[in-house]
Length: 119
Image (cartoon, rainbow, N blue to C red; front, side, top):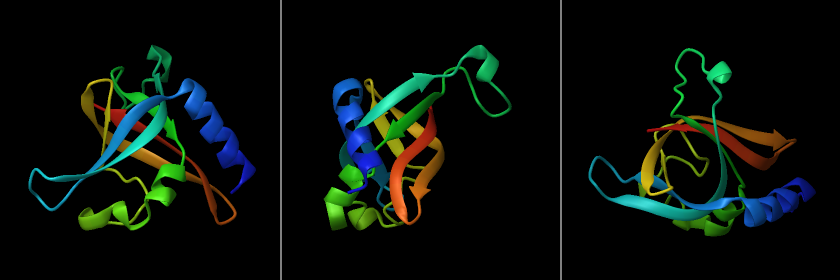
């Protein structure tokens, strides 16, 4: 495992919070879910530009739970293992939509997932 992932996992364990990554199966109300740890941060008023709302949040998470889930994520929902726009994070008692996501890689290794959630 890449040292940056080990460091991120340790940081999320100490300072992150529990969340559930969700992806809808088809068009129904059934989801595939995966428990993850995230670090959330709000946007400052000066950060708000076109398309970003003050109620949106930045998130950082590790690829570790996705890799460890193997075929269970995304399972029946399909669509690849990377977090994608249209997935949801259930965090702080509410479901929020993934509006933007960046998969940070060093070489071929996915070392961090950053993005924006809204709702």
